[in-house]
Each structure stands twice: as C-alpha cells, then as structure tokens.
Image (cartoon, rainbow, N blue to C red):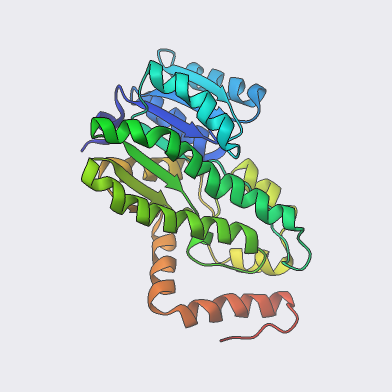
Length: 277
C-alpha cells in the first residue's frame, strides 16, 4: 500500500515523540494526514515538538500526552479515557533509555531502568491498546528496537538486553496478533543522530566507540521514512539501511566473523584481555 494512504486519517500514538526518531516520524506522518499523539515525560519538550509539527503542517492534528510509560498503573489509567474517545490505529513504541558503560561499573539501577522503559514501556502500551485493535480486527504496532538488539557489543549490557527482549517480544506478539488482523513490526536502527546519541557519546567507553565506528550513523528522518514505508508494506523486520541489514544477516549466518570484527576493534582501543571465540 502507498505509505501516504496507509497513514492518512489514522490515529497514530508515538512514545518518545518529543525528539529524535519519534519526532521525525510524527512530523512525517502528520504530513501524510495522520492524527498524531506525542507521548513523553516532559511536557515542555512535548509542547515544543507539537509547535514544530504545526509550523511545518498548519492543518495537522497534534496532541501531546505527558506520561511515564514505565509505570503500568499510570499507563492504564491515562490511556483508558483516551481510547474511549477515539481508537489508536497505529502504536509506535519508540521511547528508549540508554546509559553505556562497563558491566562491572554500571549500577544495578541502570539495568532495571532500561528494562522498565525499553521493554516494559512497550508492554504497558500494548496491554492498553491491543484489546481494542483485536476487537475491531485492525491496527498496527511498531516496536523500535536497535541493531544492538541483534548484536550485543561492549559497553551495552543493559541496553542490549532490553532491546533483545523487545525483539523477542515482537516476534511472539506478531504470531499472536496476525490471526486477529493486527500487524506487528519491529525496527532495528543503528546509531542515529539524535539527542540520545549525543548523550551516549559522553559516556561510551573507548572500546564501544571503536566498534560503533564500523557502522554508519543515520539521520532520524531517514529512519522515520524506513519505518513508515516498512509499516505500509507490511514488513515485520525493518532495517533502515543496507549496512544494518547486512550486519544482522552476518550475525545470523557467520556470528564468529562478527565477533572477530568487534573484538578486533576492541583490541585496537586497548581493551584488556580482549579475545575471540
């Protein structure tokens, strides 16, 4: 189906919609005629994002929703009246949290926090939205994972775990939802030029930076377009660029080679005791 047609007149709810990939996606589909709801924790950023979309698309329907998606009770309470007023046709679980660092140095709270936002945040929204989608026999959920959800690398033990979990969740959810007419997709972007990446780069170990240097950084608009096009074409796995797809294929077919490439980068960065295998 044509991408514009797939989103025109649809209600699209986007978590992490105040910046980065989420904002780029919202701006894109608003231009296609979608009714957009931006979800994030900080209202000032949400309002700024909404203004920027309306400035580009004066006739766009843009709502904002201040919500901490890691809190299941809050999500259920806030979403109930929203869903009673109008359906959510497309749910984009894009919100994410990340703090790179070495496993032995990262506090346990970082592991719980990333799992709460990156994984359970998507679960909470799906629990709220999917019953109505199933009841009417239509809808689409897109979970935004990461290339780090396919290939776990140095410095990303908590983040990779949460993003791997999101891919597994998406695979199982797709199997349960398609008999009801509800689509599920999952996107695996590489490093993308967003405020989150700028934050990450301040804390990445040298080994992580060396490995990440092997992958091209994308612009959020490019990732957003790939997401929208992939959804319209009914794709389950969405890779925004050829490099990401090739990396994921290599991990599945020749994982030893992928480890060798990553380990070689670690050695050059001076990782103690870095070995293959």
